[in-house]
Length: 113
Image (cartoon, rainbow, N blue to C red; front, side, top):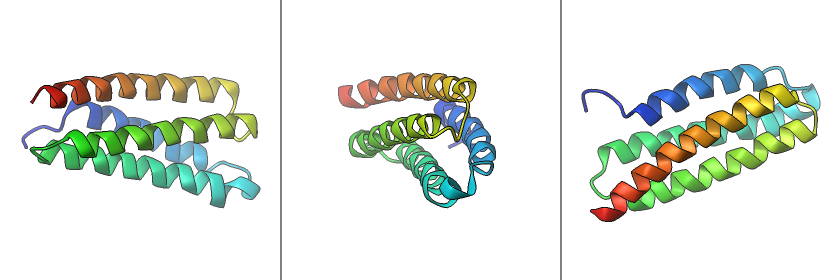
């Protein structure tokens, strides 16, 4: 694979931003919610990379979609617990929506094959 798919590069940039935010979570949530968000983000990235190298992408992309949905709810919980500001949550929501749209296109393309 010469160049990774755009979705991988996009999410990688978002993941670095996300790690910076979760490192600033209050101690009460840093090692539970913050760590879960980090692990879910890494897992999602792993699914994307795996899908880029697989012929049959359907199952892997479905798992990636599930991880992204979990990440969305964890971010919403972070906002509700005031670990991130409303502005930071809105940024994260937009990033997840954009990545989700790209993932949806990838899934539709994989279903055709």
